[in-house]
Image (cartoon, rainbow over the protein chains, first blue to last red):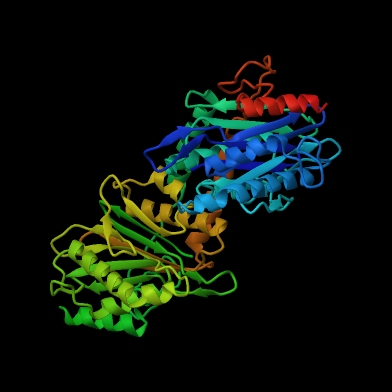
Length: 279
Length: 279
């Protein structure tokens, strides 16, 4: 699998991707999932892919010189919306070429793409493109997109990131989100590609490949894990009161009950009776 | 959907379940997903279900008086392994009865079960039972099971819970895990059923239904969220050095590069050239 996350902030864009691909657990490889389309001063666009590697590589190959239905390419598109539409067209072209043959082997046409960046004259924009070639755009109230193994790393982003977050905070959060995913899902792995795009720079100014030796990532993982446990230990334990009579249906802590109210429904009630008979 | 988690500790067992079911987002209901089978002094067993509600309710109905292939019932099974086998048999019986008819409506036979407890003469045991009726047991190195929307709440458990955790710590962790899931997935909802089984009590001594008014859960959510953000803000921001020459392939922070090395492969290289021509 894969985990990629991108955030759209007032200050710019943050892109983070892992580099593990696997066909089952016995065929694991390292493939970069982040591709940069840069024409300094004119446009800088970043594309990250998840799903079937053969499909996403074909989409990239096609994008290289794909001419959109209205004659523009990803290098000449007047705005990011048009560029995203061209990416979607490339996905559809590969679908026409591959889907039927893959289906004969019960292989789903599975690819999802995060695509974002800036074209001169526009602000930063961020899109998620689906296997059907359709896409959605991130707006102020929805500042990030994830593809691949997204769920493990979602709660921390929901808790801390807003459009007003600084690029540094977004980087911290993206790396913590990735760390949680790495710990809980073996199909996501190092090294990571991290690209930070500063709004209006129209160039890649901050990029790094992060492996296990990366000092900052080591510090972040260690500090976060340790302080999380500290906070955890600092939270009061629940307190339980002596049992009220069995009929009492508990509605809130610390009030416990003799028997959970879920025994109330007839079938379960009679189970309780049977358990009585069983004595 | 659903989120249920159970933990097996030296001190006993912790079970936590939400109560939301949905068929799409326009048909959402509240159903308890935790059922207790208790014969005080002899056995106390807890069963939690996820998946298709009609299937899990049928399994429970059947379990009520299901006689296992070797003549024992869930109330007379000599050990938890045998009791889990009887639950698996009930799942298979419902599969025989329902699966084909559901398939005609493209409804998958989807049910997953967490089943744990203690029978006199044994220690506490915890099982996860699949739709095929087969099951696995939690051991010391794998202290918990989750069913339903499991991923959001997994990282925090992986970080803090071991078999040696206290029941109170396990309760705290389970509630935090549930909180992260509630925040990130609308298909999981309050109220929650929380049951804490103290090893060798052979009875339900601690149970509570938790809704939004529950003071302890309110405190936990507030404190955890706030202190998490505090820890987050306390972590150093990354520092970026001035750009090295473009050929330099970055290998660690804070060393940035002019162009991500992912541009190296031929196809992407030529993209870069094309972007150059595009100037």
